[in-house]
Length: 154
Image (cartoon, rainbow, N blue to C red; front, side, top):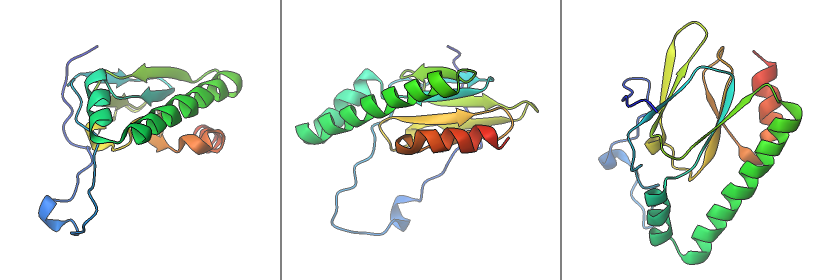
């Protein structure tokens, strides 16, 4: 694990004063306990999960049945995605992380794209990378279609 911080090319959120005001409490994913950077320079599917401290905070701010449902969804959707990858896309590396805050993708032309997982409000997810295109966060419910579209259209 390399300790780096990514700058530039990260996603920006609206300033708090420009967000619409409403009475619905908006929960966001707690920040990572880590500041490590994971470097990805191969054709990959990166599976990210919360670290243990984030998971505890998620459990604390949500009702028990909601937190359990989110964990259940992540587990089964990611398990299904792993099975699909291993069966139909075995050339794609599966990378798992729960202890990196930043993902630094290095494309074939040496350009870099950094993703700060603190900016991703999903508890877990999958980011596809083929070294030609920018990395892409995909819908785990439609993993078959997402893999075909992303990796077949280089």
